Image (cartoon, rainbow, N blue to C red; front, side, top):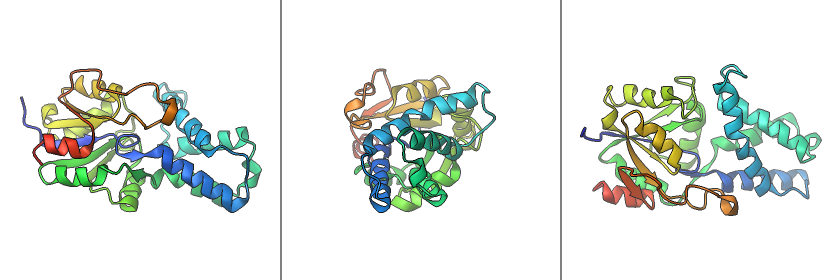
Length: 238
C-alpha cells in the first residue's frame, strides 16, 4: 500500500460542533433584538437540515453553481419566514447570522489532536464550505490546517468525484493511497474509498443531539477507527 502522507478532513460535524455554535449565535441574536419564543436549537437543526437538499439542487442542475454561503443564505431566509421573525432582523443582522458558519467552534479534541497529527502529516480540509469560510473558521478558533481544500475549487459538492479527485491531485500528487479522508460520516468515507483513498472514522455520536439517527459507529472496514482526533494521533504514532 502507498504510504499515507496527507490527511484531508470533513469539517462540519467532524472537526467543529456546528449545532452548538449556531444555537449560541441564534440565542445571542435573539437576546440582542428582543426576539422571544424561538427554539434556536431547533432553528439550527432545520438550517442544517436544508444543507443536503440545497446542494443537491446544484448537483442536479436545478441551480447553477452556487457556493455554500449563498445556499446557507437561501435557507436562512426561508427559515426566518417559517419561524415568523424575518421582519425583526435587519439586512446587517441577516448577514451576521449567515456568517455564523464561518465562526464554528471545534470539538475539544480537534485542535490538540490535529496539532499532533500535523507534526507527521500534511493536514487539510476537504469540505463543502468555501475557501474563505474555512479560512475564517481556522483563524477564528485556531485550527492548524496546512491548507484548505473546498468546494469552490472544483465547483462541486461531496460526494461528487471531483471533490475527492481534487485532494488526490492537489495534495497526493495523483496517488490516491497517499491521501486519507477523515470524517465522522460513514457515507463520506465510503465515497472517498471508491477513489482509492484511505479512510479514518472519527466517532461523533452527539453531532446532531437527540435527533441523531446515524453515524453512531463505523459501519465499514475503514483504515482507522478512532474515538477522537487525539486517539487518531496516538494510532498514527504522532
